[in-house]
Length: 220
Image (cartoon, rainbow, N blue to C red; front, side, top):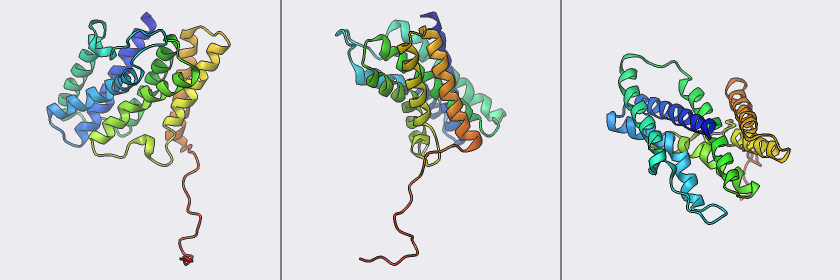
């Protein structure tokens, strides 16, 4: 449990960094930066917990940062975003900072969502979907708040695909009875490798191509 707590705090911290830096670049005020950073840091887990509602044993699943044990996550998100607002006024982060932070956020939250769903007794397909949701929902909300097309919907971005690879890798490890900590780390590296590979070497899935050459005259 201590390992998961560390990973969750790290995920919230990095997610808040990505969200607050992104919002500062579109010149949001203090409220906007703190809000956007917190949404990015907490949004994925919030959507996951709302969708699940109950575990397979009938126990209610509260939104994780609303319970006393989860309040530190909220504080980490708020304080990190608040600090970033003032730091970036004096120091401009290097280009690519948001994408690197975002990739780490996706990797951490994907594995957190997958393992939490697995520990709650859900079937494998639900674990994968909840891992995907936890990994990408915060980034989607951040991009929408800052007026950008979410990475997950941009052509040539292995974003959700990276989350799927890591989540499925985690479940394969559990099938072969690999301890959860090692399965988590393996899944984390799978997500990171695919995501950073897409950024550095432009790995991508096939994109849409028209069935007809645009130069051809339509028959209609």
